[in-house]
Image 1 (cartoon, rainbow, N blue to C red):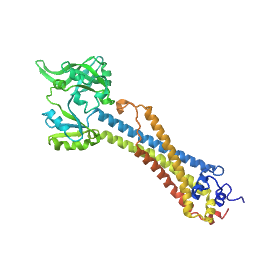
Image 2: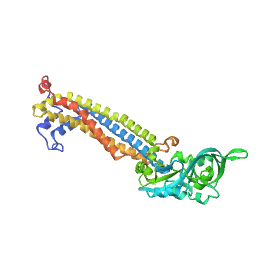
Image 3: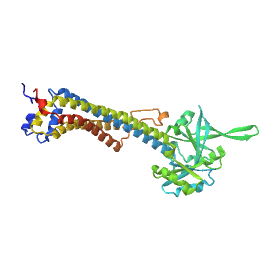
Image 4: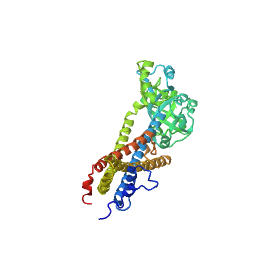
Length: 428
């Protein structure tokens, strides 16, 4: 009969040589020897390698998916908030004194800007096409305090609207200007839905505008469908004497729900307010559900890898039953045997998690830095997929992966600790 412990760990246990591993705890030393076996246990080592790769791929995929959904949600939020105000204030029956309302709103805590506006629909006729658009009447110097329009000008100046009130000017979105086939200095005609009663019957109002600027807010809805004119011009164009509502900008956009809720108490019960989060609740709710669904689905990859760990440890227990029995006869406790296999599973999980986290973080940086994934701008409002990995998401994924790997070691390690030495050595 061959020596029972050839190619095993027991010689090292009986007489520890002085080496780099000799100072390791017994359980960790044995676990590493089992993982790095090269001869009879090569098949088990191969299964352990596959488990490491499975855990790494699962962690990497989950980090990338979370970074994608977080980046998409954050980019849409930033662009929506940059293109619009944080809070919209309106009054039942219309604003009687918009200047007074603006001053009272500016006096509220956290308010950094307020501006009255008029928004209505029209049809623009350009050199090559007719396009439906939303015409927004603004006061340029006040609009700069509530949106990012002034900083998004690609040609011309926003304050040119003030200089051209007698000869009306209009600022168009970049995509809208392309559809109309016009650019700086060209003239377009805007036909409104408001009618004027004439001897010939009702006729729609129309007016010529000179293109004095082109902007790009990065949000397709605005770049392809909005034109800005001066508030006084919009009043005459649409036959409105007062603005429709007042836009409000805050020092922190996440304070918008609280500020909006307090406006009726500050201005009067006839005033109502709506914040950007409430107006886009369905969009961000859908994005959050999609993020959770993707995370759960891809997270199952880590669970599958954990099943590989269970399989490899069960095979190792069967293969090493003789070694386990002899270790027990030499005085190793059941708890010590259990720790050997728990450590082996944790090493597999830690190596896979660290490797997957490192590779996933590197891929996220490359994908976001070089904008490698393009998407339809008319569907998602942005031209490429942004990736943003939040520290909390990173920690949750790493801790969860290690915890799943630990749970996978419980059953095999308990079976190993319950092994009866007499039964294991009976036929050896």
